[in-house]
Amino acid sequence: MELLQLQYFLVVARLEHVTEAARILHVTQSSLSKTIQRLEEDLGVPLFDRIGRKLRLNEFGSRFLHRAERALFELEQGKQELSDLSSPEQGTLELAVTAASTLPNILREFRKKRPNVQFHVQMLTTQEMVKLLHRGEVDYCLSSPAIEEEDIECQIVFVDPILVAVPKGHRLADRSSVSLTELRDEWFVGVKRGYGTRDLADSVCKSVGFVPKYVYEGDEPARLSSLVEAEIGIAFIPSTARDSREHIKYLQVENHELVREIALLWHRSRYISRAALEFREVVVEYFAVRSKQTN
Image 1 (tube, helix red, strand yellow):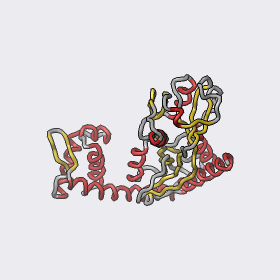
Image 2: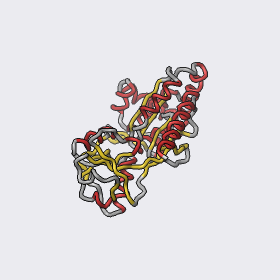
Image 3: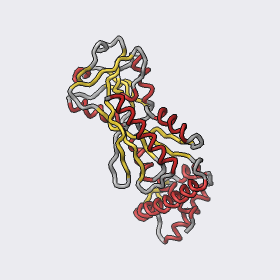
Image 4: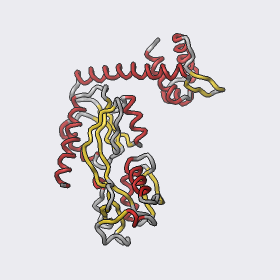
């Protein structure tokens, strides 16, 4: 059994599509198919059910995938540990976020301490983020909601009130607070389902007897302020993401606990580099200062 066979198997198993896997791996389909076939011969069992040109991971394949992921995970951790020991001032932080509004300030503070460390950031839904966490493919996730699972470490760093953003000309713009039931007939702009703030707001609204009506659903939370300002709709926006635009008014929500928890997440078994440890310190310190400012 060869390391290359395991690496190819992981990609094919996750995609269940040889053509797409070959494209990602930059190899020919025939070469990839032969590699998978040799792995199956080494193991003495088929790992996929072949239906025409389609592949489906079978029970043998599912069980072996779990073991292969763990084996490659440990090898990757060893590689990262040696890299950290040999070049502690270099390296790349892999980050995933569902709560992105505070990230620019956090990264700016971190860069002051570690100017030579690069970072790669992905904006993901909660489900996508958890998948990367389980695979050990990211150093940290900055997430809302918090995630409690066996192999995931979760540190809640901030409790963030969710506000209602309305344009200055709106019927509620002269108010400082609003009850959810008063929003029953409003049109909303928001992110798609799967993002923590959207799912939380929808759930709380449903508990008081209505489902928000969305005229816009997107993947970029930062765009919501401009849509509110343009009077396309109102929005649920976390306090950490509020925009200082003069044509938007932010209202507190009355009578209901509408807050999101922002958490820092990491895989319990992933090697944590010195730079990653410092990043965690920066995140905790940033939100500690923010908590003092809001209290």
